[in-house]
Length: 315
Figure (cartoon, rainbow, N blue to C red):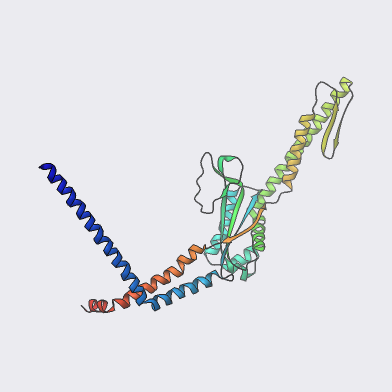
């Protein structure tokens, strides 16, 4: 008897569930039909606002009004990317304060060009697994260093948000020249060159010392040998039991490296300007057509229920 009651309860529960599902489906269909009728009834008002949204979207997406990102990467030859990051950040603060004339003066730009610059964002270049490879650029500023991944100290990216029609290469050169003339970086660059020159002198002395020692050994052993420097590189023909060739080559390579660093500028352009859309197509759609559609829908609802709204206000 108890088993039969359980079976009846289960059947009743199943019937209730089916009836509820039917009612829910009928209610959902009724809501959909009401929404369709509502849109058809107020199609003129809603359609007008959608057209206004499309017009705004078209205006903002026109070549003359588009917002673009101009990205490039610099190689830092003096100090580290952290110091240069802060210096570029000062330009960003100037833009935030809407001091276009000051920005034009700092970067030596025409005021009309400076007015088109909406943001200058320094971004760290990230090296994954610390293998000295430029893996990606942290445009979001959300990267956190750990034992495997780090910010590269000799590279820094810059993203410039500008209006269309800007000479991007000229703007890039203006920022690089601004950094080259920075007093702090200039001072550090002078200090770096003095240290390099001192290292070159030390290497020259070591090379001369090894050269003399080798010549003395050759004369002492009375061997057929000669040591010469051609095109800034040593060559040796030696029959003795010991040769200084590798040591001399290493010292000479160090000297060439130091001399190469002496010729480096404070910063240099590592990669040219890459242009991309600042606002994506999806962003523009959600910020133009959709808001106007919702505004039209809101006004249509007010028109639809105006009598109820007026009655409620009077009460």
